[in-house]
Amino acid sequence: MTPSTLEQHDTELRERVAADVPWQTIVWDDPVNLMTYVTYVFRSYFGFPRKKAERLMMQVHTEGRAIVASGNREQMEHHVQAMHGYGLQATVARAET
Amino acid sequence: MIVAGLGGGEGIRIVLETEEAMLLSELADQVDSVLLLGEADDPALGRLLPNAYPEDLEASEEFTRYTRDSLVDGKRQAAQSVRDATAVDHVDAGVVQIELDQAQAWGWLTFLTDLRLILAERVGVDDDEGDADVETRDDYLRAAYEWAGFVQGSMLEVLDPIKP
Image (tube, rainbow over all chains, first blue to last red; front, side, top):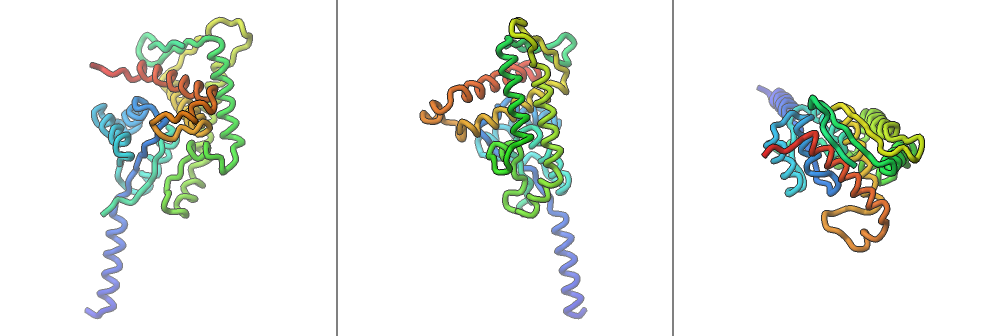
């Protein structure tokens, strides 16, 4: 194996790994939205059971942010757009590795 | 202002005093105007249309390009539906009764959220602790902010009752 093939191989691997890294939908705390509203949005939009929706809502409230979904970038952008539609502060981020 | 569930479960009835309906109609019209005419650097618009990629300018601009029109349309439709539902023809109409199905109720919930985000920006609600200077800055806007939260909270108590 020549160094150039090795390098080629490496690049492909890196690209494959990069493409597999999931993205995240992050919802951020804001002082405006009611806790009951945030919970209802999580339950209705994501279909989370009440306990999970409330846990994520509390995480947003106490820690300032919560990851509410992971997946490919297109899905995460779709979720973030929906969250903005509901008036929640949400961002798309690459998952930390 | 009274919120009650409709028989059958799917939907709610909101009963507003005439003055409350007029106020809500006026506020809904103003939210629609902010969405239609708001300057790009209006911080209130920034609350309604947040930056999806705060650390990636290019991705942020692309996201805005693909989502902004549809988000603005959805928010304007919600505001207009509230404005129209609360429009009162004459002042001595007594109370205004509005029945909403689940989808219409969502329109109201999101409108009330957008309204509160705008009012919060205008009166400077930026943390959970009350600030004496801020509280006296604009009593009318603050009262509207609190009242909109009360309406939304009352709707949620009926739409999503917490079971003991």
